[in-house]
Image 1 (cartoon, rainbow, N blue to C red):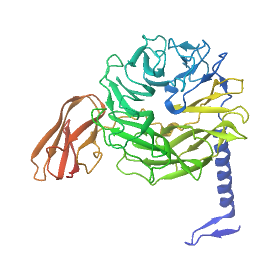
Image 2 (cartoon, rainbow, N blue to C red; image 1 turned 60 degrees about the horizontal axis):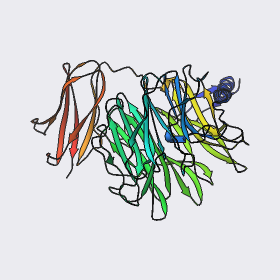
Image 3 (tube, rainbow, N blue to C red; image 1 turned 45 degrees about the vertical axis):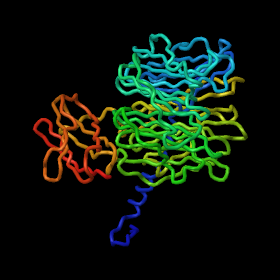
Image 4 (tube, rainbow, N blue to C red; image 1 turned 90 degrees about the vertical axis):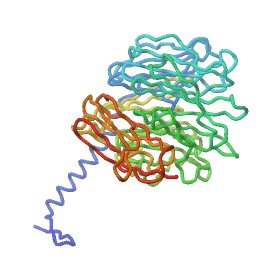
Length: 502
C-alpha cells in the first residue's frame, strides 16, 4: 500500500489519509448543519401601525426557558412600549402587554425600550415626551412578567433625559441615560438600586469628566461588582466611542477611555462580560465604510489581545448585536442588499480570531433593521424589525442548538477550595478590585501586608455566601511599593502580590 512520509520520518498510509479526509468532510457537513438549525421565523406583532425594536439597547432578555421582548409601536395612535414573553424557550408566545401609558405621537427618537432580567425579576426602561420634555420611565415585574408594578418616572425634572439602558444582577439594578442638565452638551448619568428598583441612588455623572462632547446611547454590562457603561459622543466634527468601569458595583468609577488605537471615527461601542472573558466591540469608519472592530481579554481584563477587525464594509451606519459565552461570540448585524436591510448572523468559537459563514436570518427584499441576539443554554434567540408588511413589525427566530453548551459558563460549579484572583487594575494608584471565591458560607478575611509581613490594612472580614465576591482596595493611604494581599478562609490561605504607584 502506498505510504506518505512526513519530514520528521513518521508515515501514514493512504487509507489513513483517506480517513482523515472523510473526518474533515463530516466536520464541514456538521458545521453547515449547525448553521442550518435556525428555525423558521415568527412574526411577533400585528400592529396596524409601525412597531420598532431597540437593537443593541437590549430589546431581548432571557432567563432559563423564559424569553422576554420589548418594543415600541403606534397601534394606539401614540408611541407606547409593549412587552411579550415565551415560557417555553421561544416555541410559543403569549399576548402583547402594554406597559407604558400616555405616549407621544411624534418623537424625534422613538421611545427605545431596554429590558433586563435577573431570575424572575424583569426591569424595563424607556424615554417619552408626554409632558413636552423627554423623561426616563421605569417599570418592573417581580414574577417573570405575569404582573407589573406601577409605572415610575425616574427623572422628570431634567432637560431632555433620553435613550436609557438597564442591566441587573441579583437585587441590584443599574440605569444609564443622557441628559442636558449641564448645558448644550449632553452627558451620561448613572443611578443604581440595590433593592430591585424600589429605591434609587442619586444620579452620578459619568461622561464629560475627562472628555467633553455630545454624549448619548448608553449601554450597560454588569456581572457581580464589575459594571461597564459605554456610549458615543460627538465632538470636533466626529463621533467617538467611550466607556467607563466600576469594579465595586457603582460606588466609584474609572476615568473615561476608548479601546481603539485611534479613537477618531469610532462609534456604537458595546461591552460584554462572560467571565473570565471580556469583549469590546465597536464600529469604525474607514474610507467612508463602516467595519466592526473588537478587542478581548481572557483573564478578566488583566491583559488584552490585539485589536481585530471583521470587515463588513457597510456604507451606512453599522447596527449590530452580539452575545458572548466564554470564547464563543454570536454576532447579528444589519447588512444591505440592493439598498434594503437584511439581518445576518455569524459565529466565532475562538474569541473572534476566526468567523464562520454568514447566515441570512431575514429575506433579502424586506428591509430589516435593529437586530438583538441573546442566548440561554444551547439556544440562540434573535429579534429584529422588519418592513415587509408595509410598516415595521417584530420578527423572531431561534436556533435551539446554536450555542455549544460546553462553553456555557453561567452555572459553573464552585471550586472545592478558595480562590483569590489577581487584582484589577494592577499596578494602580487610586483603587483596585480584588475578586475571590468561597465554596461555602464561611468567614473570610482579606488583609494587606507589607514586604516584612506586617498587616497594613484589613480589606474585608465577615461572613460570605458561597460564590464569587469583590473587594475594593484603596491606595490613598498606602506608600508606593509592593504588597501582599492575603485571603484566609476555612483553614486555607491564598496570597497575591499587588503594586501601588505614585
